[in-house]
Length: 143
Image (tube, rainbow, N blue to C red; front, side, top):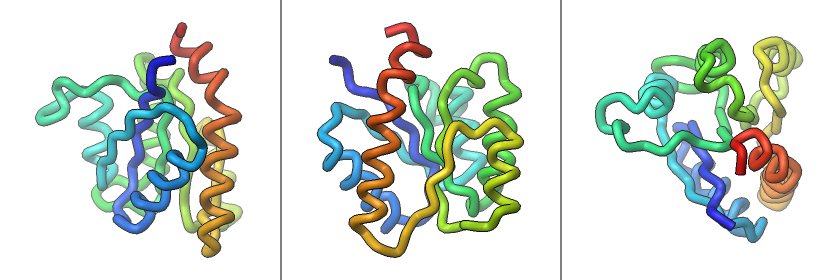
């Protein structure tokens, strides 16, 4: 099976490392691209600038608290764009605020993971989410 293309939009290097480890623990074949702010995420998705050759992701993990454009703004942009709205977006954030959760789902997020402080919980949540989305991602992307 071809690797699943995942875009991680995260500005915390520790969380990038944890997410990478979680994906590896899930024993899935993946190709991970990482961008560190909301503006970069939009440039990546639009294949602008240094991302001109980027492959469109099949799954996006999106933090809420990002520099330049926050995760809610990026999510709204993705879900309102005809060429991008089919891509599943999982919010991956330290926020457990009901307001953030409601706003994410109001903007058509496909899932919401609150980053737990416990590493094992975090790894388990990411692995579980990716495993549950894999068949849906392949169906949406026509693979």
